[in-house]
Image (cartoon, rainbow, N blue to C red; front, top):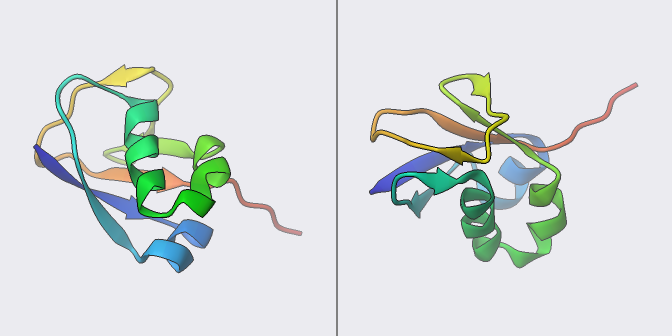
Length: 81
């Protein structure tokens, strides 16, 4: 199944607001991050430190099951001050 992944901050600057990846259920969170990093290998470190959210809730599990209607987002680490 193909899902759209929303990107934010630095990731959005590099890849645009949305990327599409192919997933099977259940899928490991790290596999979603790896698939996105294949689109831009220079972002591998940033993605490894990013958080995944599904339907606007951060995911703390290693493995998730998705439906085609789920909203998936990757939020990279940010700093401010």
